[in-house]
Image 1 (cartoon, rainbow, N blue to C red):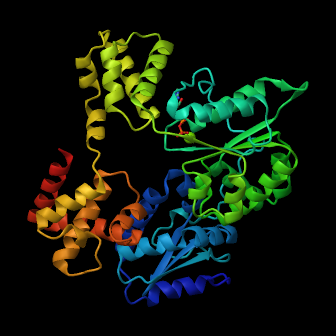
Image 2 (image 1 turned 180 degrees about the vertical axis):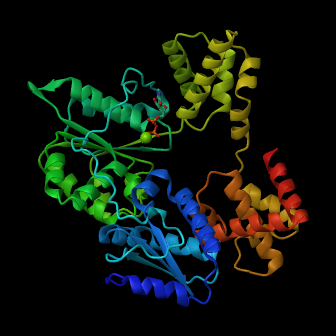
Length: 475
Ligand code: ADP
Ligand code: MG
């Protein structure tokens, strides 16, 4: 990418001379769709932090130019999101081959932009200092954590670290497991325990934050040239806890910084607690030397809940809420909602709120009624394999063609339909779906989704077909 800053003239010329230039409204619409998909793809937080200020400068033949207000943002966006932005543009407009990410011209009046709004060179606000510690949730203590077979080992390790931080063999403590199984709860519990007590007469300072927050703080320190302060602040704590470390995958600079902080703290005899969705060895995409160090202390797995644990958790929560819930209703919930504790809690809360609001007895019927939509969402869980099988049957092709390299229309179209349904009916990510279809790239899945959406709009018979398949899979 070129380092030079485009002058006013250049961008004017660029807009005028573009042969494939759509009218401004068309271009602006395309850009709006690219932005919306970008936002959906990376999530609200990342989008707001990094991508909100990306503005369209123009299209010249095969090349789109977008601009950012600072070099720093430009380099960051280019490195972290360049490929994604390019593939989204390609999806939107086949003629586009490249996306050039530049800084905003520094002189002159604002260029003639298709979408002028976000161009003003505002830096993202630097957050107030002294937020090194994220607030802890009062409900997440050891007392409220219900222990059962799937989590007893992780619980014991967490207790141990809270009692005696930086004991050999327990540093770092690495907690891992799927979504909503209690990782954050246990980390907060450790932090509460440590920060309310004193060790050898001195207060223990604990820093807890998500990996995302860590990155955000680090980047802001870089931006405001206060990295030294940031480092000192972090390295002055007794216990550092980083939640959801998987967020640092692919964020090489932040990983590097974290690695150094990690080493400095461990060398100084401080405790580190980490959580992630996978074990250190399975966190591919993290630097090897970091993975090795993460696995050096105690690694504890939070397993999926069992029926018994779900019942115990529900009983404990109902009791804390001071409501009597019939055993039948608890059993019903524990059988139906198996994915994670957060969902289970949500369902119970809803039931209790409903019973209070309408002053009704909680019965199995009320549960069915109130949780109708939630339960439907859970019933709807269908696997990619099932989708492939049904779609293959429907179009009379072999299921192995779903992963084959063949691109003949009679094969490729059903494959696209299956990808589209996989995106709609499962919570799998685009790369994940791609892997199930013969290791295809996530952009291929993205393309399939938009192609099928387009066809549904154009061809009523095709639309009915897809709808039929969906209903079959849902039932
Ligand atoms: P994770 O960080 O693993 O995604 P959380 O710690 O945020 O999951 O847990 C999700 C919700 O479920 C929280 O409200 C938490 O209090 C609750 N929870 C999870 N496990 C338990 C448990 N064993 N006992 C009580 N509550 C739990
Ligand atoms: Mg969590």
